[in-house]
Amino acid sequence: MQVTQIDIDSFKQFIENRMGLFLDATRISGLNELILTRIQVCRCMGFQGYLKLLEGPESAEELRVLSENITVGETYFFRHVDQFRAFIDSAVPERILRNGRRAGFEILSAGCASGEEAYTLSVLVHQNEALFRNLDVSIAGIDINPTSIKKARLGQYTDWALREMSPQDRKEVFAVEGKKYVVKDRYRENVTFEERNLLEDDRSFWLPGRFDVIFCRNVLMYFSTEKMRQVVGRLSRVLAPGGFLFLGPSETLRGLSTDFHLYHSHNVFYYQKKEDVELQRESPHFVPAPERVTELSRPLVSDLTFGSIDVTWAESISKSANYIESLSRKVRGTSAGFNEKGAAKSGFDIFIKVYDCFARERYQEAWETLQNLDPSMNQNPEILLLRAILLTNQGKADEAEIICESILRNDELNAGAHYLKALSREQCEDRPSAIEENNIAVYLDPTFAMAHFHLGMLLRKNGDGERAVSHLEKALRLFDIEKPVRIALFGGGFSRNALINLCRSELRNSER
Image 1 (tube, rainbow, N blue to C red):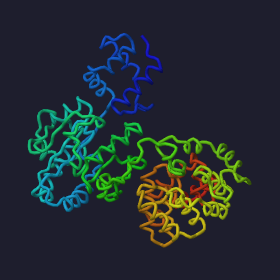
Image 2 (cartoon, rainbow, N blue to C red; image 1 turned 135 degrees about the horizontal axis):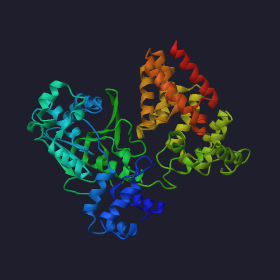
Image 3 (spheres, helix red, strand yellow; image 1 turned 90 degrees about the horizontal axis):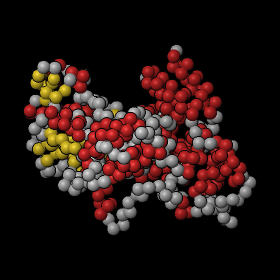
Image 4 (cartoon, rainbow, N blue to C red; image 1 turned 120 degrees about the vertical axis):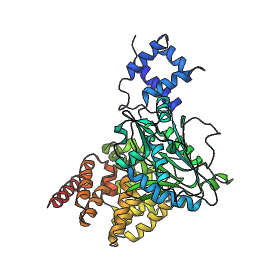
């Protein structure tokens, strides 16, 4: 019996639709063998028979078996400890302050794996009893993997899972039974574990505004973009206004949600749900953001400049400098895409003409093109960003910063606006703010070469040589593969080779 590539693709699509998990090339090792094994164990007539079983009414147990084989939850106590420091020092005090007279304090550990995160939170609650005084704290751990949930409930761990804990904390939290460390009862009493799929609704559990803090770390990366939005939407609904959300260090909400403010403390980023989100949803005038990107909802420039998760028309354009040039030539010297009054007919035409002006360093012409826009497009955030870029290139950083602030009031996760604001702050000799804005930009978009480069230069001037070298080295790698569009828009008039040489020069200076 063989499993074809078509069968594997069908299986991956089923897993995505039913479980939300995106099986990309880095996570499908042995998938062929897994499918063959399950076909034989379930005594199905080939792949189609197995697929029929999965889609049938008695699929629950087989889905549980698949979740055990597909998901991997290796973790340990106090993993990413800076996030727990931010939780105790910043998130909890602010949340309690906003909590009013609410006696309960509920924490969700989503994708809890074998329970280390949930128990870590329990340890922190007990270690900070004064902070949680008079609060009934409960911690709910959920995971799709039944084996992980079973282990979490047992609360038995090896020395390896405790590697970030001090000997004193180990003695306080665990009872030793042979080679096993067993969580003591006092750290179990406020923790529960349930087998749950983040995509499956259960109104008795997913109560609106139920949780004060949610940890969902290193989980979103396993979902497709569409499923990410669904999961984040659900987490937003069950998180109380003003509540906090912690993601994995390499995960962001950029392109997924506008329900949150971005926080940065203790060298980590995390999110606070906006107070007015629920009020907006209850308003008769509220229109939810589209779940899928359509021709009417696609951003004009974001995909090109910030590496959006979705593969849209902009993403396909940005992959080929030659294609962009061919499109640009169609605009040069013509009125294509513009009406008789010189106003652009579409956002696509605007971008192509403005990009062409940037590529040829005709900034005044680009500015005039934007001045001829139909008034209805003047407040489009992507058009505002183009204006800010042009003002920055003209040395009018203060005016550019005003526009960036306007953009960020509506979209705090706009990496380009944070980067331009960093340039403005540097011109105002406010280096700490410039460093902070660049830190945000590279967190939101780790592939943003110019933001890494500028941050590296600022850190070197600030005497932080180690971090400076790290960001400059990242910038050097990224410049080599940076999209031509971003070079044109954010490169300040420098070519790719010029930026690479400049980056190498800064690295040499950092070594002196």
